[in-house]
Amino acid sequence: MPMPAPPNNPGTNPDCRKVDAILGHIGDEWTILTITMLADQPRRFNELKRLIGGISQQMVTRTLKALEADGMVARKVHPTVPPQVEYGLIDLGSSLAAPVMQLATWVLEHLGEIEAQRALHDEAAKHVRR
Amino acid sequence: MPMPAPPNNPGTNPDCRKVDAILGHIGDEWTILTITMLADQPRRFNELKRLIGGISQQMVTRTLKALEADGMVARKVHPTVPPQVEYGLIDLGSSLAAPVMQLATWVLEHLGEIEAQRALHDEAAKHVRR
DNA sequence: CGGTATCCGCGGGGATACTG
DNA sequence: CAGTATCCCCGCGGATACCG
Image 1 (cartoon, rainbow over the protein chains, first blue to last red):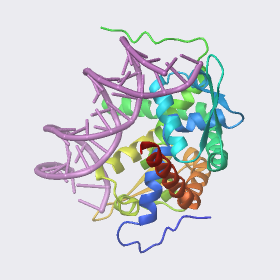
Image 2: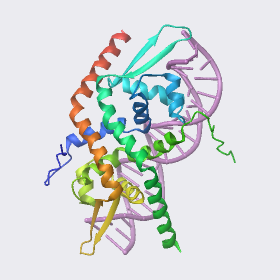
Image 3: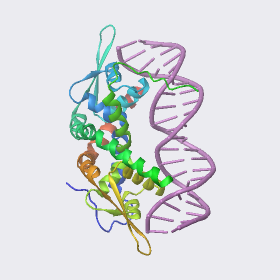
Image 4: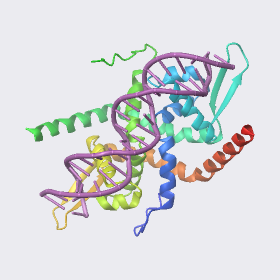
């Protein structure tokens, strides 16, 4: 299904603005990585932090809170000692996982090409400077 | 002076870190919207600005520059008066368009559900406060 | 029209310390 | 273990002005 994309689009497309706002959230790097990590199975708090790597504890909390507020992730507390908390994708989140995984997969598969392209571009820039 | 001296955690997945860095770019809201607008056809500079709506001119420039550096977008200048510049997806960019469009489409289709979930969550939060 | 240059506020997000 | 609270820096991105 294609986007609206009408030729004679006058002012601001309201749908576009809404989509933009949502994309600002789920397009976030931490959010995408988190969903990726939860795609196959639920994970515990520090497990997520470790798997993602390079994320601060606060960002794990914030990201999960936001995903909870969007009804994408469920927080499940096991009343054990020490306490265990599991986060898993639910309805909205699990359906979002598909496109997100496709994106993440695409990046993985094209890592080399992207770096190569950047190197090319940097090289071209150098010649201009001289 | 303070050398970064990154943690260099053994548990940190290097691929995950690279993917993260790339996602930080293409996951950006303006980047996703731009690619979405270019998915079906090339667009001119101000046309893009108008279609996206709510984006500053500078961000259009920056986003397109970044996409050029990644070899995703080609800049084509028509030597007319007044000058016309067209931006279109090429190799890497056009292959990226597929997963990006899927994400954008998902958001469009689930706009209502997301807002409903947020309303639910806000409602629940209110009851806790009382 | 299609940019570039400059200023600047605000909030994203890391680091650290503390709690249940 | 799983958070919350606080501080604080830096860079994202808007606004404005100017150029080819």
